[in-house]
Length: 249
Image 1 (cartoon, one colour):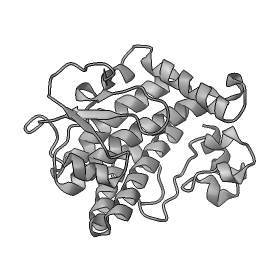
Image 2 (image 1 turned 30 degrees about the vertical axis):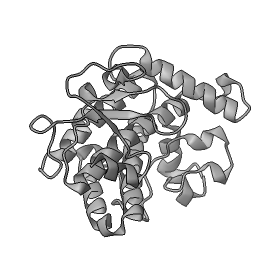
Image 3 (image 1 turned 45 degrees about the vertical axis):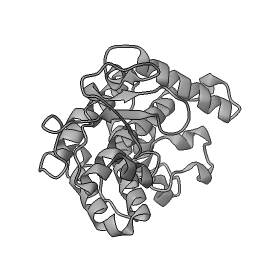
Image 4 (image 1 turned 90 degrees about the horizontal axis):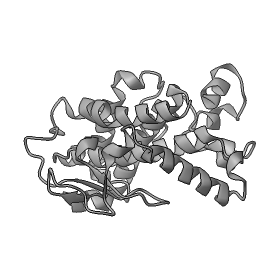
């Protein structure tokens, strides 16, 4: 199953480890990203510095909430993609942070390892519970930790989650057209969470989130800096009605 997940793309690929084992460096427990440690703060700071260097700017010129949104989107995408892929493949995978390991690498999807044998311990992806468990036990802790660390709109953060769900389904559908229907159905189940109630559109190729991830603020006024599924792609980057509020978060 892990090989099949990897074939969908780098955000789906995961390593595995014995359940209950302690991580061996460079592996680290994902739970440290959601607990009261300074690990998440350090991750946001390093991403902020990387974004500044990439744009030839001083670190202080990159808003902290932009870096926090980038970290959040990367983390939730990393949790959602393998879980959605496993659901489509009808194989169990336990994405609860307490049993996951990660490596603190810069650039691209972070390396992630899941418990190798979670039969009877992890959520069954074909049960009515897999989507709720993923959102409540994996996505919520990461999202709460980011919101606790940096003042940032919940609408922005849950828009990131919606974007990650849609992107995972789109990637899977593109790689395996024979699984496209199942991929979109799995995404639809995740969109059924009350936490995503603010999204006006269902997942699909034409999806546009109802908020902005804030990345455009790295290059204000540059339309190329707007993500393909951003609400600003429809609004012409006008600050009016709820669009300005959503993107200023």
